[in-house]
Image (tube, rainbow, N blue to C red; front, side, top):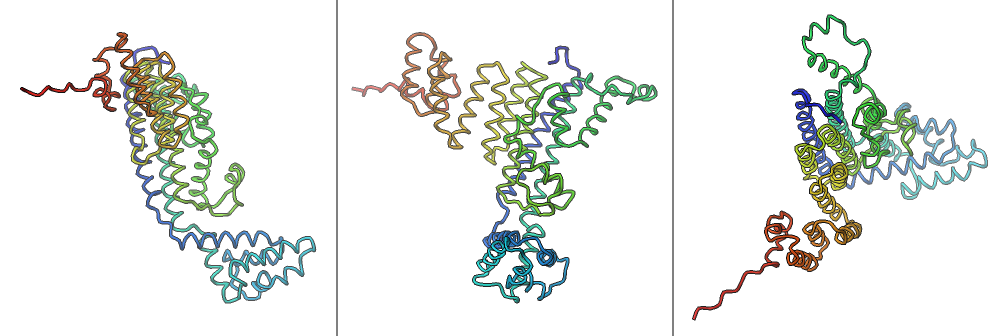
Length: 444
């Protein structure tokens, strides 16, 4: 943690980081709208199910030259040929003749699968329909997936932009963590003219070099070399899901959305290499929430580290949490951010405010019982009376809150001014019950 007076360049880096994380959250919020409006018609869904059923039926056919020829026709590598289809699929006889006895049950099951798909049997004149379905929904992405893929690439790019600012901020505050290699000549040092200019150039080069690395390298740098000791695996909602987002983005950019070797080797349950990755609006929503949570916590962690215990830093972190894609109702992201701030500060007021926001989002997610248990433990503690009363109100114990406040007022533990100045109690309109207005006697 820095102790010397910060330089103007360091202060500017924190301002840049505050701006960058808000731009990032707005970008994610905008992309979230795509998940809300992307069409998913019944026709698309039925065709997708048909394509999945056909793929399963083909997978049940034992490996053979006939199956390879069938797949070649499906992919468009081989021209449509009645004889190929007849031998490979329609009657099943050709496959039974070439297969070993132990595979006969698989062949029979494949034939039944196709008969079920096409309601009693697959005729030769229906084959063009099968091929069209497979080409549209298996061999190339559907329009819905293309839109979602574009949004995902944009979201990952936004995360990388924020990461660049986080790294730049950390290195600006701790330039000793820059590489000690011979990056600059004497002529370079003279040309830049000032130490700040030289540091800015060195930081820029290091940021560019890091951004050319992959997620695993960023994870290691943030955790072990960045100074703030930020562990991406603990900041993410689900580390495996977070990693999959980046692997998928790479597949979209480099192999047009088809599973590549890296995706197949690192993602559990991956489809076969060459399979096009399909995506739904719900997948996009989860991916955006993963990116938003980890990205926001990276920024909050950096701000709190370099300004702790600054009130300004706490307010910046608070505003980030409050502004995180509020319209999108990303409850899990906000829960994690408020919890992180609460655990990083010694301020009782900030901890309680974050705890209240966390409870509110958890209740919205249906965790009423969990919130109630925590609130009861807090109410029974020796915490501040007003905060305990607010906790009573959160879980619907209004009478207990009023009794608690009246008892504390009678004992002189709090004053009327304390109650009236409490934002929480005022918002929950409890003062009128503590001090009901006096009834005026009728004039005689």
